[in-house]
Length: 156
Image (cartoon, rainbow, N blue to C red; front, side, top):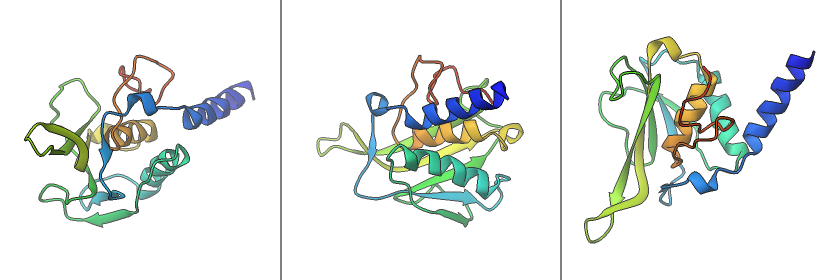
């Protein structure tokens, strides 16, 4: 019973945490849809739970769309991919945000699309999906190990 209560409290605290100090980018005037690639072996209910957690934090996230992901996501889309190939060999998941450049050509902070990569052995990790979705929404990692955006990675 104590373990259940602890997990329930931890879940509520993580959804209530203020992460605004970790925001380094944001979506332009578009609410991003989340594209679950047809070949991605991720349960849409699990992904919806991660989306709902971000909505509870006040983030605008659109609907889940299933389609082919042979090319990069379109403007206003977060593509979810399952892949063993990661930039960082030891990572369970990664996110790449693509941003619009400023008028002078310098890097901007307005996201136009994002890609989330999850290793096959972690496709059933809700915490990992929520963490990587946070990156896709414009948040960076933190040293706070109790945060969903912990730089040491959430517990999978």
